[in-house]
Length: 68
Image 1 (spheres, rainbow, N blue to C red):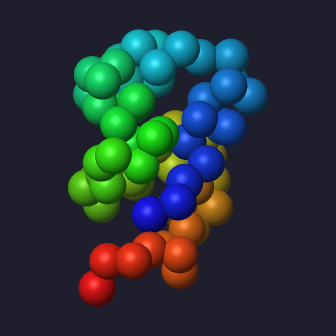
Image 2 (image 1 turned 60 degrees about the horizontal axis):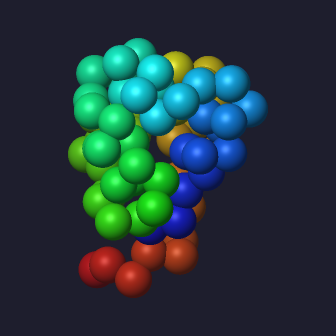
C-alpha cells in the first residue's frame, strides 16, 4: 500500500522516533510503514491520520495495493 507518512512527518518537522512516540509505536515501525515493508493496522493508520488531522485516505492509497 502506498502512503504519504514520510511526507507528512517531514512537513511536521518530526523524526521517525518522535512520530512513533506520538502514536505509540517504535521508530522501526514508522520506518517500516514509510518504506512499505509493513502495512499498518487500521488502528495505527487511524492514529497517524488523526495526528496529522487528515483522513486516512489522504495518508494511505488503498487503490494501488496489490493485496486482495
